[in-house]
Image (cartoon, rainbow, N blue to C red):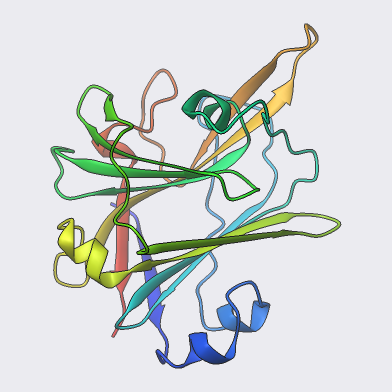
Length: 212
């Protein structure tokens, strides 16, 4: 199983440097090992970084893409699912019973839900209130989605075992087709080795190692 090392920072750092500031992430390892196993077209660069302290897990996606599609008809599940977004999944066990999904578009609309095997999704479930914070920004070449998740909520959901969090890291890229419709390209940190795109499977998860 692939591993990504999550470096620890002084918990006071978040009070002096904002999480959209590149200086906040200078200690973080940069994960760029993304692919679209079901599509032969080259993908645009994605940088994922994470840090932690005794209070929070911090994450940052930088996606080098300025042709971003956001379905803005409303804030429904369907609207977010039809938009460019980044995704983090966390599982409590390798049976995926349960696992938790965070899907975030570049405007920080959040689709958070509890899931179980065979794509049984509970969209009424929400991440514990006030235990996740999100921010985003754009520049001339990319968009950034960053956030913090409380360690307390990860422990409450049984998602930290020792110094390990088992997680999936993904991206959905929507592109306009000749017929005018937008269709997704599915991008993942770990190739789940499935014939069709599927993030909702145990083989798409890796390990975040919380470095002391």
